[in-house]
Amino acid sequence: MPDVYYEDDTDLSLLEGKTVAVIGYGSQG
Image 1: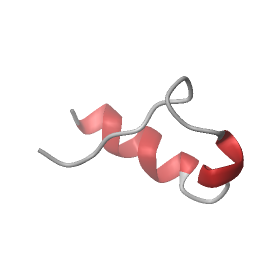
Image 2: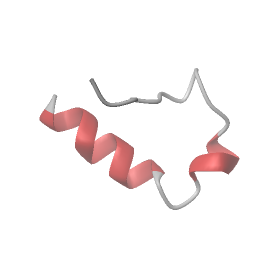
Image 3: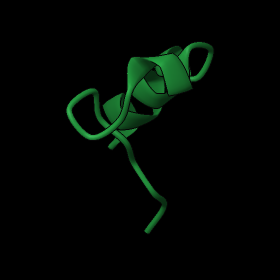
Image 4: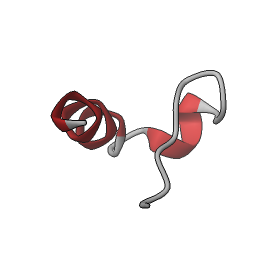
């Protein structure tokens, strides 16, 4: 399984540009 990160697990500062990608990926399950 791929590593999925959430706001509570990581600092948003590290996901500046990846936040949208993570949310979109999470929506796909």
